[in-house]
Length: 142
Image (cartoon, rainbow, N blue to C red):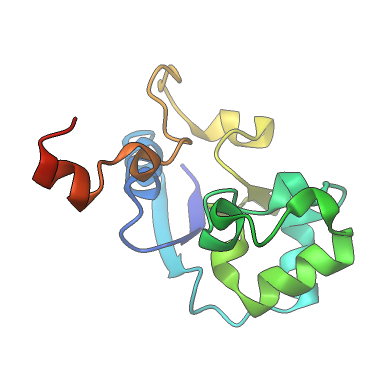
């Protein structure tokens, strides 16, 4: 089985599910905090090269959710610069395995490493997007 370098946001529910899938498939993981890693262009480019900004930016990042950042309005180099400045903007996970640099858990390059996982569980969509606010809970809304 493979040794996988897994760049994650600690505490991310989906990153935890994704790591579990890889571990069940028999791989060993070395996990790295994507927010603390010292990103630069040379290091980030292999994961995102050839993709559009809309494909490489984390659409659940606060700046995107608030509407203050529109990935569709960015050039590739602008998107990369922003992600280096604020790694929360990097779509995750980033995975290094067998000489491959993979961004996102839906990449076809990752399929050989997923073992018997059938893909039926959504491990991409952030479950925190569907949470109830504290104000809604106080009112009894669901």
